[in-house]
Length: 237
Ligand SMILES: Nc1ncnc2c1ncn2[C@@H]1O[C@H](COP(=O)(O)OP(=O)(O)O)[C@@H](O)[C@H]1O
Ligand SMILES: [Mg+2]
Image 1 (cartoon, helix red, strand yellow):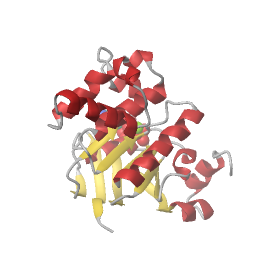
Image 2 (cartoon, helix red, strand yellow):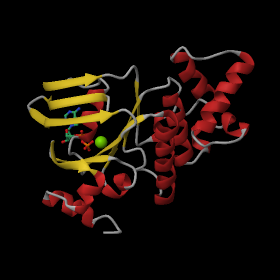
Image 3 (tube, protein in one colour):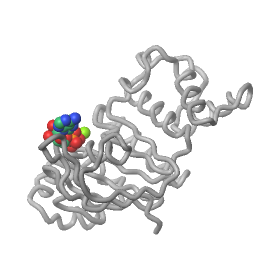
Image 4 (cartoon, rainbow, N blue to C red):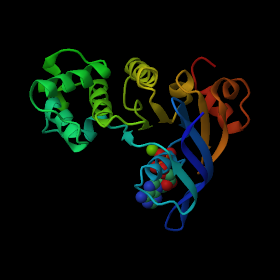
């Protein structure tokens, strides 16, 4: 399998505090890899470092993807409140040099909407405040897809959503992997979220990976007490 991301012994510090301490993992083409851990364990720091927003203090990061995009927990807040969906998507397409004018542009907008499971032209005229959290997350994903990324880094993309909506957004991520061959790094704070979606899962506690491997094996035989604790919080276990 081609690895699009290879992280080796990554360390990231904020001043004297080391938020990530020796983390290693890979993300293969078409793979969905989960990172799970409590708030403050260092998950977002890994995501931001991959995106070049934080500097590694040690270790190696190899990225073999032409483009990577990130989506966030606060989908409503990540969209410009003054921008209708049409402008938000157009702006993203323009930013990545993909925008075509006229009828072709309208087709691009319709294609992006349908990619994220939104139907009808009406949604193009809406503002973020007029949409549900789930719809806003779909629009953020559509914006990310505007540049035809190979990798999506999703930092707690469903944490702010109702459970029923969470499942639908997670299904969308799976569809995108299947239809576009997208590789996804899926960050979450509870195992229930990543359980049915990820091929491999890493469990993070206080800056280090304490467990990890094929999703099924991890659920069948968790190594660390911390993983066992997280598993007990998953309703079906
Ligand atoms: N900009 C920052 N400056 C100082 N400390 C930070 C900064 N960002 C995060 N941290 C600290 O690093 C640790 C990991 O944070 P973060 O990566 O956001 O965790 P998570 O995403 O798992 O909740 C936390 O203790 C947090 O307080
Ligand atoms: Mg975080």
